[in-house]
Length: 244
Image (tube, one colour):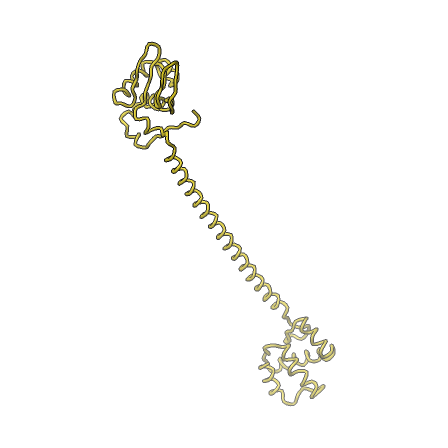
């Protein structure tokens, strides 16, 4: 019995006895009680859709009174849902059109099950594909945001590295640039060049684009040519500084 089942269709909502609670309960009970394969009971051959019972037994199983069971059974007999044969000690009830409620051939059910499983697999596959795409998009966004953040931090770091050097308020070079000048020209010469560039920029009232390149290309050459005096033609040096 554990393998048996019955099929109920939504069209049952339009059944003429659907609003009669007792008749509906009894009919559903008959569907569930009916044998789903040929069987034998006390020498009586029972076909699929039949079962042996009695009015008191049906009353006990459905929690209805015997009178309520009798009336409901009369309804079902009258409209052809079931046929009831009364014997001396028992009653055989037959659910008419049993094949509509119980399929002895499970092929249709297997096909329906197969279609449902295929549909479930397709939905699962689509969901997994969507999840993978969302994960890939999120990873791409995370990587992009990381790169952008890193670039911003690097630019910020470079900007913060550029600062006014010491007491010479017009000269802006980084510590690393200062160290390279120390290494290439010497510490004393570099400090003299920084001082010279600071005085020159203050005198002209302008700022060079790149003080580090300015010092390498022009200031040290000017100092070498006219040390310790300032160059004779500051205008020409200034133009060179501004274009450095």
